[in-house]
Length: 302
Image (cartoon, rainbow, N blue to C red):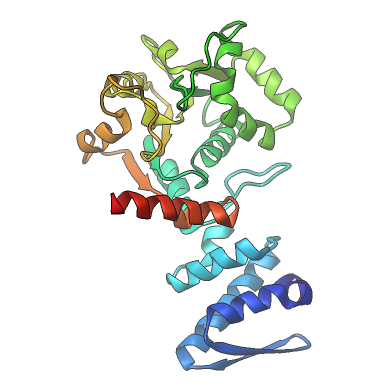
């Protein structure tokens, strides 16, 4: 009951605040009083939470909030949150219905575009799916790439070899890898070439077979770069392209974003899917969701 209701009933209070009902707890019995539809919905919520607890899930305030939103949207949290993308020292599961849709799309398609604001888990889930494919021997290597575009700042000359030069741009993907695998395992896989990190320009002329390929920050590609990247796809490979069309850092004169252009060009192609994530899928600090919403309102006003 403590896991279900929280210390000092803090999670129970969140449920009561979300629905016009009164909840009484006595021992292991929960009684919900209110309008029939609301009371029944809260009853379903507790049934879903118990199912998730039995499967080893734990809850915090943000997790309960997302679970409530799913239930209000007539979704089953136990189906969304119990999906295991990656086992290991830190299991990875989707945390929202949008993320579950994204995971399912990658499983069902050869090329998947995940488009959404910061904090929706686009890159993190892509890396988790790539590691899972590698462990399941569904891919022989992982290729991580991003366009080397600075976010509004001039970084100047960067010393070192090619890997050192692109390291600052690839850091979010490295962080995800180190979150899922031991650092020595990552180093060994990179030494063998099983995990390859390369700037987008270095893929020109190659054919990538039996690989799980991730193009991150794709909003900073040009249409020509996007076409070049997508035509690298070889046999037995899977591609995930992630990006946020509200954070385009292309310098003036480079033309339209390749991610914006590709949505108009690649329509009705079998094995290719677009997944749109929104602020409801943000799984960072709660305030990030509010910040994304504020910027969306400002853009609509302009």
